[in-house]
Image (cartoon, rainbow, N blue to C red; front, side, top):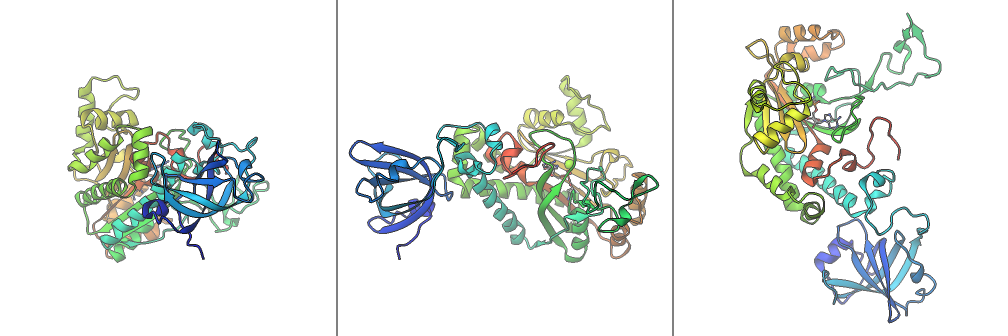
Length: 464
Ligand code: 4AD
Ligand code: MG
């Protein structure tokens, strides 16, 4: 049996002088004068292509090899030899080339030229075959491993929280409904849809966050985390929002807000360091072609502690700026992305932690501070991205939590299980959520969040 190689391993190992096999997709074919052709093959294992020399002595050279075009799937056997060409150490001298799948060049949408990201979004099923989307995909996969590595190194237990749920964690009413009712013949009661007849006997939806369930497990297991898809039916057509995105949510018992921020900071640094150290080839592509300031920006994340300021101080900084923001700055109003970007890009020129937001703009579960006006919340902002992390210390006091929920119009009976966590063995606890796509944007410099997830779901778009 001829040993089979993935191209990345082949280029790293360079097993010259012996016969080996590779599979992949043709990026280009170039015919030389002396009766042979060059094929550039990529198999997704890395950025670099393998150059294959196809000589006219191959039995199918005239019938098939000369008809090979960009996108064809091939299986190749050959001997790796040192390459005389610049920029590659080895090439493969083919002894056999089998075309497994043709790609009609008259209709195959991916040609050799550079395509815009907008165009590539219209062919989301083919775009992983491009250099940039291939590199994003490898970095995304590697970062996912780094997420689990970080928490396992620290003894956190992964819990799988439900995707279908009846609780709207963020209280923003942005849940998609999950129903099996016949939408053309909805049962009604009192003029409203009767969800009592629905699959779950009540209205259910897709989760906006695994936090509430993670809290239940933190108050039994100590330190837990979730990493899963979350869904938001918010009509935000921006380069930072998806209707379906992946979130990592750790939750820690016996931990206060400062400890929560410490963990989030260490986590962000771990992910950034992972990409710099383990995804060097793909990372270099982004530093060269997408954003030349990227390497410097990432190294500055690792350089020192993240500054921490309160929301009140942040508002004072914004007032001091004398800027004419589109959204007026006012204590009590949420920070808009223009405010966040000004603070972290112009005032602090790096990552920034903002804490202790007004309670009126934050969800019910955040712990009330003694001032009566603010809650123990924290957001972490990154240059070019804005909010990467949102978290808080949770309200562990039953009476205060009940008051807060009632004030926000929540039905206490529906959240009976969540209140039980405060009735029995309640403890100080804290957690946060980090948006997986946003950190991928940050480490790649990709401008649009739709280009860092395989099949983006956004308002008006869910195909492929
Ligand atoms: O600030 P958020 O809404 O916080 C929560 O959901 C909490 N339950 C987390 C927790 O404390 N366990 O979302 C957390 C992060 C944001 O900081 C952002 O990075 C990301 O999730 N995020 C989105 N990413 C992409 N598209 C969207 N529509 C996002 N909404 C939030
Ligand atoms: Mg938030």
